[in-house]
Image (cartoon, rainbow, N blue to C red; front, side):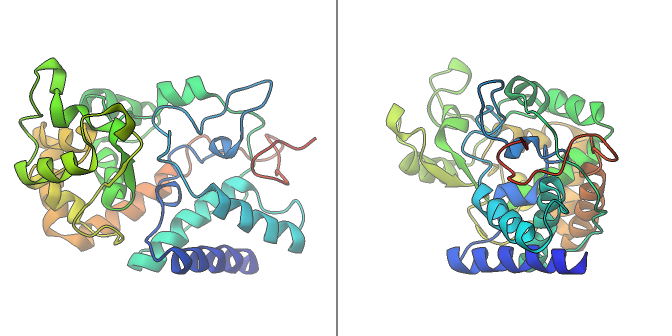
Length: 288
């Protein structure tokens, strides 16, 4: 299997060097990649998860997974699942930028279908209150600490203006910006996202301080009321989650250690093994 891991690492490294960026969101949170369903394109029999509200234009980098899969299929046909590739890509992308490493057990199999409605229901939305997000994590066997530490994946990546623009102009129908949003950040975001419908697809960094670096600055931003998404800044509205944010903002080693622990838990959720599912030849479609 070491050869397969090397193939994944090489492809991720080349992509990051080519784009001169850190890891994309899709490779840092396998939040629904435990059965590879997120990789499937729409078909006549189901609508996939790529355009589910929590994923829309935020889960990216599918072409990287495609390239890795193509190389592995040439070397070892029908051996490494798309789900395993996604889990390995998440680890290697973060390892290359932050030196953070965790164990990835292989042998997962790929789902035979996908469900946009399930993704909309089960994945956290940037507009949801903290208690709803926590409930979704708990329903999958995770806990409050996992909510906070996995939210730290927002130390890299970008979000569309549509996912946070209401904070800038008309928060909760008040006609005013979100009062919890730092005024300096507000000004910068209004430049990126003017109050016009055609700005909805513009992108802003989730962490504007260290955009391409996987670190603990995300938590420092929250301490300064500079979280981009409502769901980010909501971590400061509860004493238990705010205490964890404070700890991670002060201790990057603690964040790295606990992020790795939570990722190991995350990538075990809903895993298909044995005769369940299949090993896809093309990650975008099920086998014939």
